[in-house]
Amino acid sequence: MGNDYMLVVERFHEEFERLELTQQRLCGYLHMRQSNLSKSIAGYRRFSYSEMKGLCGSSADVFYIFTGIKATDDYGLPEPHSARPEELLCCLGTVYLHIRAAGLLNRDKASCGMVQKQLEYIQCAFGKLDGRDNIFYQVQHHYNYTQEKMAEILGTSTRSLQALENGRKLPDSEMIWKMYDRFLVSPAFILNDPRGMWNELNHVLSLLEKDSRDIILKLLDNSFCLMRRN
Image 1 (spheres, one colour):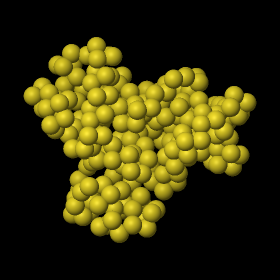
Image 2: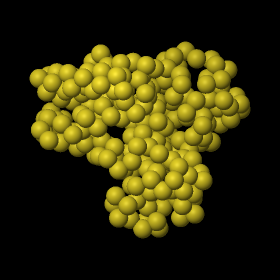
Image 3: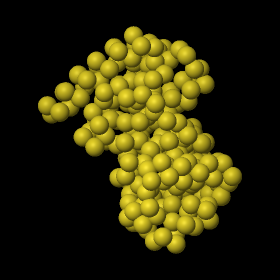
Image 4: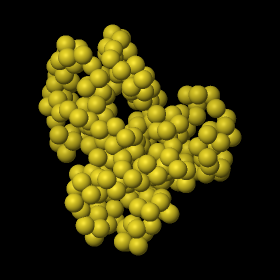
């Protein structure tokens, strides 16, 4: 494992301490043995996809664990437990389209570029991991990479990449991090994590000027109302 991935492990431990979870309780969320948890926290073992999905069911900020970004504001959006992932993805898409059309991100150019890049992936994939439309396949073709080039960037073999693209293999925690680190693909997309999408949406909204944010919040409120009617 690369040293940069260890930042993910450190943030995992930080969240574990913030929530004051016992290792036994944490193992319950992750559906794993305590011996494997100890190895993963020490960086000797990667968390599996199913283990990270289990963590998404807790109060841990999985989006922060992978990205280092915390949503510091809450703009009154429906809580993640009451919103479907499809609804939150739709709202992220709405924000992205308005940001791109109006050039609304004006304060932090570096963050703005990163956020725009992350949100672009909504248009090419919805975090699917099965079939030929999954996120690994879509990103490779988005950049017009060969499988060899994509595998080299991700530090894996072409055989493993093919398995990821065909849905025969699910990404572990290090691969989820690499997709964010190399391509800025949101871990919330890959994990289909409502709380992660909710945190990401609040973070993107925090980058907007207040007037622009207020307009988009009204649009999002209308979008949620329409989706709930359907």
